[in-house]
Image (cartoon, rainbow, N blue to C red):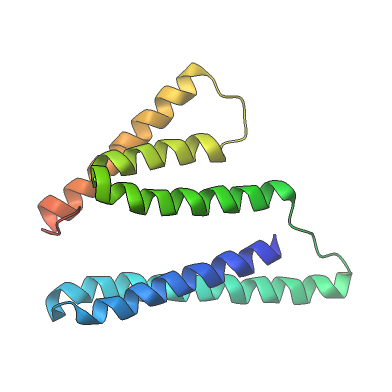
Length: 147
């Protein structure tokens, strides 16, 4: 999993860094929140990469470095594709419906256990609730418009 941590940490760092640079054109009051979130994201993703190298260094002494499984690469590829599709769908159908579909699909995809009807309903309730809470916080409390 170490290689996946390095790759995903680097990709997240680049995405947060690009958003950080893009936010420089925002008005100062609007940019503060974006700078804080993206700065924290960059710090956390850099921490993921560093901790991965530290784990590799410590495991090198014991001689066991696990390989990234085919299933992990599939999860990384599908999740990356879903995020790209989410960005496209937000512009077409809006934030709320596309985020609900994305959250529901990711919950179903990333869960490995037995999937019953109750699980599908629970995943739907969680995804709808989380998206509506996020929408309410941004639009009503912080007055940040979402697409």
